[in-house]
Amino acid sequence: MKIKNKVMLITYADSLGKDLKELSMVLDKHLNGVIGGIHFLPFFPSSGDRGFAPSDYTMVDPSFGGWKEIEKLGETYFLMFDFMINHISKESIFFEDFKKNHNQSKYKDMFIRIHEFFPEGRPNQEDIDLIYKRKDKAPFQKITFADGLSEQVWNTFGEEQIDLDVTKEVVKQFIRETIKDMASHGCSLIRLDAFAYAIKKLDTNDFFIEPEIWSLLDEVRNEAAKYEIDLLPEIHEHYSIQMKISDHDYYVYDFALPMVTLYSLYSGKSERLANWLKISPMKQFTTLDTHDGIGVVDARDLLTEEELNYTSEELYKVGANVKKSYSSANYNNLDIYQINSTYYSALGDNDESYLMARAIQCFAPGIPQIYYVGLLAGKNDIELLEKTKEGRNINRHYYTIEEIDKQVQRPVVSKLFRLLAFRNTSDAFDLEGSIEIETPSDSEIIIYRKSRDKTVVAVFTADLKTKEFSVYENDNQILSQ
Image 1 (tube, rainbow, N blue to C red):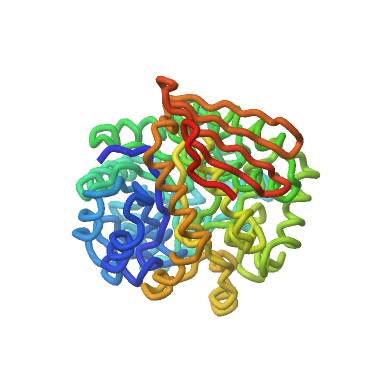
Image 2: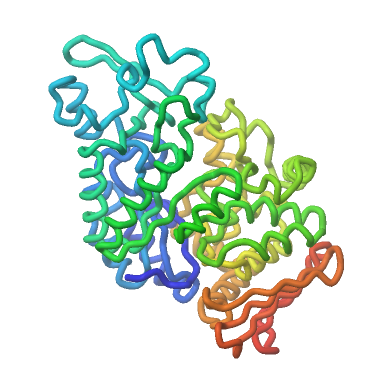
């Protein structure tokens, strides 16, 4: 199925109900017309990181269900799967064979062997300091093989996630086979997770290395195009990198919008938001919340350092049950540039602020993505956080069918569903249409979205200070507060 210009739900297979069967029931009962696509966070067998250490892309984790449930949902919704192009699980057949057979393994070239990557006598401290790291030590892991020998391999993320050498033919073949298999199960869009780390090059920081990164992306795009699959490269960094990717005609993420919107709602000022909406690309997916934290670095220079600091500090003041420690090493936070909280709780569990934030997202350029916790205006799950000591679990609540039945009755959720259904059906949000923004005062913003033939106009008028807003389509009021 081709990508639709409709709201995309982001969810784990076991978060809206305990498995894919229950998720399908929730979709049928509550979300008809509310969403048009589903981003399934990794549902493959995995040895860690809530699915992001996949061991086998050819099957669905049996605890969630099987391919038939995924394929059935693909008949109604356009689907996005994750492909961790940078790494694979230690428990994959590839790495297991490498550990067993070492230099005789047919998969030995799949992995980045440190003694082969660096010249003799290196890496030295200067080499290690240069690497763009996700942890405070060298991204290497010592492996002992069945023959008793040991060596180090590249390991950017968790201990379970071993990096792949995307320059080698054996990995290119693995990529081709994985894309083909995903296509056979109804995938419309592949999210290339952590792709910016995939190219390693001596004497660089090993992050978003040009021009090699473009060669990799183009190779993957050409392969995906055979099956009419689009790509969504995932990267959390300065917004200018997203613009660069957009210039190469890829879909991108708007990871700057969450922080810019928080700043605007905390401060009651419209200028920064208006400036970003004027320049952000139309070929993108917008977010306010994801399975990770709220990104800070993504909005740098769209907000000044003072404004970023203000927003971060205000989040801890205004936010409900948000503490700095939840985004620290004490709670296994991998990324110092992310703050762990649900978006609803970041806005103080306040219905008016939250609904305004979602209206802003619906009117922003691109296709809205809404995380399952955000879809139900979910609060921070302190119980799960403390039970697991995992910072990101504050925003990874497991909803039962009974809980969902109650949550959808809340006024903020029913209004949100109405807003999303409008976003899905109005021609004003045509991606080939236009967007115009006005700021009548420091606190006010007006956003016009027009269909390509200009016959349908949707208007969002808001006062960021008072949190009053209205949504109209061709003079018919759709929603207000």
